[in-house]
Image (tube, rainbow over all chains, first blue to last red; front, side, top):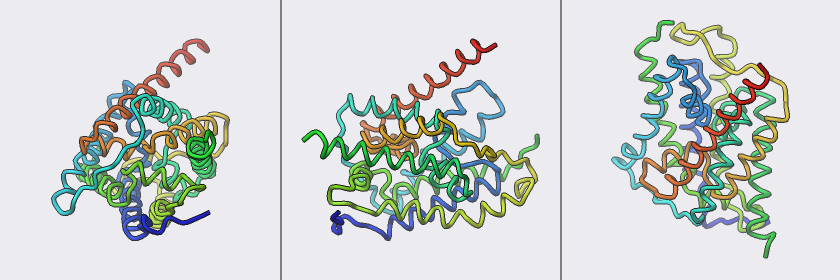
Length: 143
Length: 147
């Protein structure tokens, strides 16, 4: 294994991670909810009126975050290598998988691990393993 | 159930802070995500610091919530309490992880990237919402069959 030192950014990664943890902690303490993006979106696809307002309030903040970020720093513009069919297949897998698995990188990976939930530990390890294997097969498997 | 208006302030700010955290950390850059998932290539371990930092910060607050019976505003808690590991959890997580490895997007960063007007993120997010809707339809069919 070789480390890509040129692109290694532990500082911003740690600072960003701390912000994620603070937001998740605030939601749990003040609202009693897990900050899980797939769960928050998925809950909107069910006709339960009492479940709509809090989800939309959180998502509004999330969607406005780039506009606020750009006011103080330069927004990093991502480079995306995946073509359209890949994006569609990936999106479908992520949508189905996060709902069947009851969480994604935020709900299981951040909140679940911080709650020391055994389900979230299994889910997080499974997600990471599947991600590692998929990228390995795509980049090194079919050469 | 009465909600305190300040709770909506926390929800909104929570969304803002979470989004800024995702951008700052590098999670909204699929190239960086895939460089983290590529153990056999030149490996960029940065994203381990994202999850590590977030989890360490969350440990004490979540331990406090666990001892409480209500939120700081006195409203009920809605935290998960399941502890069983079932097939749905594992198969769902495998499916999600495969999709994550394909494009480098997970749900939060995808939504934030849509707000950054990244066209590929919009395609991904539309498909993700379709996948979530498909889940709801399949669940409803399953419930109807068992009734």
